[in-house]
Image 1: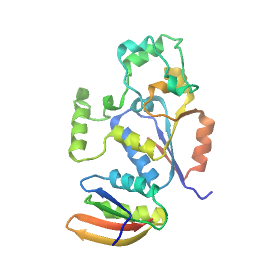
Image 2: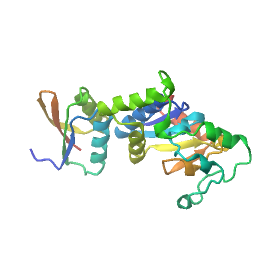
Image 3: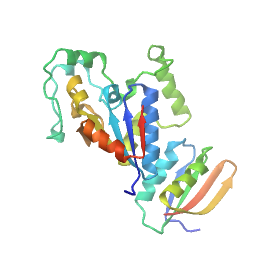
Image 4: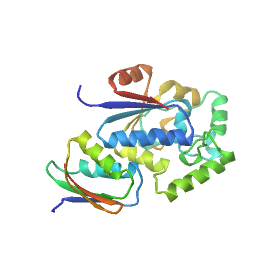
Length: 177
Length: 74
């Protein structure tokens, strides 16, 4: 096996940690290294498409992604409630420190723009273009009632822990963020 | 010196030069040359690292103040 590979597991939903993970992913991918990114629990929040509150009840599926993994109907009242409190979205992530009720991320974004550092959404798009594989944890999808339609990246694979174990054993580096 | 492609990342910060260069290099054939210009403080190191990892050859390095211009054979 001569092709080098890296796995990154993003578990946190904070802006700074997601930024860290995506900067590493972009760096590795541009050096020609195979990158597989895994997302668990709050890690989805950076990939979630921001929906209006009214869409929580009557969720429609995306006809473009026919046959993709999705939870069509939530069977549990807790899932819409989680959605209500944890709406996610690239531009709505909190900081792990100095959040200041949402003022922190706003100022953080301004600072990044002023220094012409790429923002999180730009990093996600370029990671997708560079061929980073996005893999999701299936039980989190089921538990949180998320479907692949809710994510801003196409080509998402929904896999289990066996696949993660296989990927990490093959990889040279595994980052848990 | 003749180059097939130019990448200008002046004013762009850390991961951007690498990403732009990687995207350009992917569209090029072996043996072609690309010039990349940037003024990031760690620009030169990251390009040298990129070339070592991808087995590319650095043909020329020019420094003018903070701006560095490098020619790489893919």
